[in-house]
Image (cartoon, rainbow, N blue to C red; front, side, top):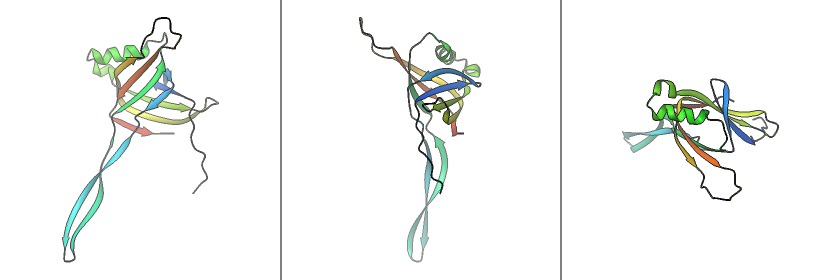
Amino acid sequence: MANESPVSASRFGISVDGVQIASFSELQGISTEVDVIEHIESTDDGVRVHKIPGVTRPKGEVKFKMAMGTNLEMNSWLEESQAGKMDVARKSCSLVMYDAENKPVARFYLENAWPIKCTLSPLRAGGSDVMQQEWSLTFETIQRVL
């Protein structure tokens, strides 16, 4: 087995149609699982249970946090899905993880994804905190491609 270095990500980005539309600081929810099917066999020696793989299915939601800026592309994308314009709201996109030198170290391809939720961080008058947005995307399939 090759001696591989662990992947370390300093920042993240989301690209739609090959164009990065947002950068973000936190990512969670990338998950895929394989269903287990139990095949029960009755033999002369007794009952045997065989576990075999079933359907592989991705968990259909990822969440990420980003500073709120003036770019409205994510908001426009959310508005398309809120309006029920699913023919334009469903997009294929990539979640890209970058190292400290700004080189891509991992990429996940999401098919038929769209934003389902945006939550703003708590607001405080007189505060100096950067406004944060937490976005949730749903998708049909996910695949690691880098």
